[in-house]
Length: 299
Ligand code: SAH
Image 1 (cartoon, rainbow, N blue to C red):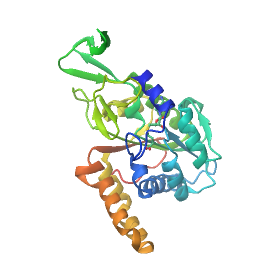
Image 2: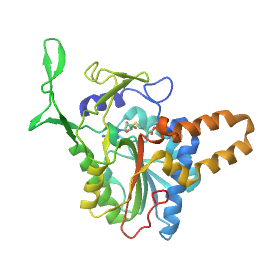
Image 3: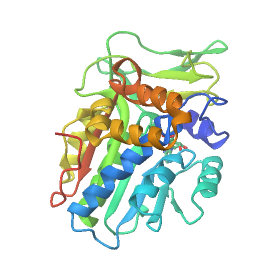
């Protein structure tokens, strides 16, 4: 999964209608603006530290960062964790002054306002059937799984990333928003999936040519963050979180300024928040320094 996704992301921009999948920030600017409002409010209540930075894990096309920074303040220093050279180019075009890093550990020791949208789902998982790790092997000319049965997933790569992030927040101050599709409590089940051209595909077909993801186990992420000393908020659905932050009011204001765009704004709002669209499947959780305030939208 790690090798497939490294090749996949290094060789294309997979986002948007002409790509394989569409993420929340690519649907409408409303999403990035709410992320920016949440982080800016938290920063202000933390005493507005002047040396704070904006950071993002897996920033895609840089759309979320550009929308969030209009709210946070365009002069904020930007640090992006991104391994794909192709997507780094796209991000540099949107955010010419950004500094790039390969690893979370390379972030400067300054208070950090961070967001990760659909980042953890792309990090590799392992699958277990009982005590046996379920592997992918060559069978004749095709790939096959070694074991079938009740599957339990875990992800050392995700836990290592959260540990690094929580350690950074505890050392340097700040808050991080983790937004992804997944579940509130660890539970057995096979959630590995492949997406290509906006459709589900066979997970073992065309290695490195389709997007491989698995649902994020937020309980496991929360435990790893707490073990590093970070405070962890309750989990919210994306729909509830965006509504509590005032996305409806922001949409109404935008429609007031641009009545010609009312249809697009209304349907984008529904895609982001409706329970049968992204609203319930996607979840939001925040990590923060224990002395920083709880970010808004999680009560
Ligand atoms: N956050 C963006 C893009 C999500 S796609 C959005 O919401 O539109 C996943 C992103 O994570 C891509 O930018 C991809 O290149 C990046 N990525 C995947 N694995 C990574 C890794 N191990 N380290 C850093 N970035 C990674």
